[in-house]
Amino acid sequence: MIKKLIMSIIFLILIFSATTNNISGEKQPIKIFYRGENLYVGGSGPENYTKIKYAIENASNGDTIFVFKGVYQENVYVNKKVNIIGENKSNTIIDGKGKTFTVQIIVDDVFIANFSIVNATDLFWPDPWELGGLGIYKSRNVTIKNNIFSNNFIGICIFKSSKCTLRNNLMYGCNMAIWGDDLNAYIHDIDSSNRANERPISYNKDKKDVIISGDLGEVFLINCTNCSVSNLNITKVTNGIQVCYSNNIIIKNSIIKNINSTALHFDHSNNNIVCNNTFLHHKHLDSIFLDLSKNNIFKYNIVKGYGAAITLMRKSNFNMFYKNDLSSKNLHSMIIDKSNWNKIICNNINGSFIKKALNKNTLGVSGDVLLSQGAFFNKFYKNYWRERILNGKNFIKHFPKIIFGVGSAIVEPHTFPIFIDFDFHPANEPYQIS
Image 1 (spheres, one colour):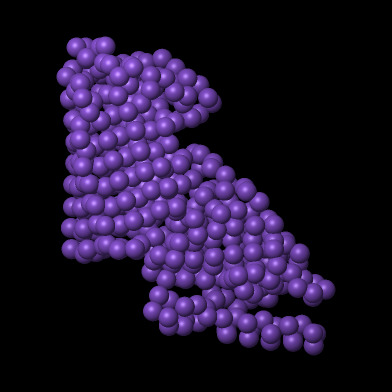
Image 2 (cartoon, rainbow, N blue to C red):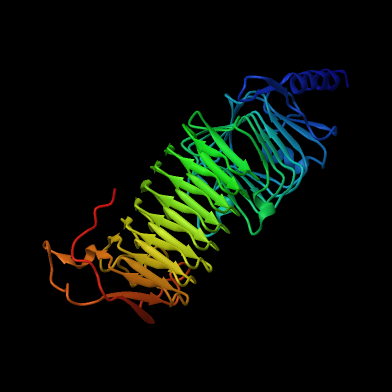
């Protein structure tokens, strides 16, 4: 009993003396949600657990798990309302062993602080909530403070969750992703003490008429209007810019390159302008992704990646693409899925005749643009289609460009086209994009 009492006193001293530094250098105490039982992982105590997951299995809601410094090679699944606190973020390491996630939270009111969370590296689709070094899945009031994330596909992934708090998390070679079905899934308390590659993450919520610029590690615009984003240089992270439930945003004169996932993501965002940007070398997913977003204008952008350069999903209608340079190494330069009345005019569109589709290694009808799921009413006009050039010559320049459509391009690509569209006046020379 005396030994347990002494350990509890030491534990409480560690808890209440721990601090985090915000961006201004001020110190803030780490607060815990509950005062239940204390459980210990690592260290030399005879009753201490050897793995974090064993402590969680034996914990009750309201307990606090203290983890002594060391390397814990495990995938931690948090399904109880507990506090999990490391001794020191630099040397209390949770190693996910290259799996799809290192820590995954599926319950409300969890608190995690003072860890290095590493090696959640595998790309696993279509379950994006399993991609993160730390994933928060359908949970509320989760607090993540004072952690280091490295060698992860995504540092922190917040999926269909709400009212989460992030403070003083440092991410290297990765950053954050937020996904959800409604605006509430994007509403969180995230400040600039969270950093990617030593640059602050700019999370903007309910802002109007603000200018966002400078050396930033990532940009979020959530429920914003009439804002300007310019002169960014974001590189070697997971995502570049997320624009969600926001309108009348201008994104210009920025360079976003070497991104693991998506350079620019629009969700429920309309009447925005994206111009004079360069999006380069995006490794896995789409460079630019539009979901339920309308009346946006993209002009004078250079977009080159390994996945699709541009993807339009779920009624992303009435968008304009004018004088962009689009190319993809492994997929289509453009995928239009369940989206109509878009205008694709005077672009350089690069591709090859047939490429392997991502799923099941089946040969899909490929090329520069792929239409699917009823994308019937899009207009293609005077685009330069590089795939028509053979040995420096365009032998079919007097013929329309055929654009193939399939039943599904995203989930189960089909082999044969079920409909076609045309650019009746393709350009014979590439456009100068500046």
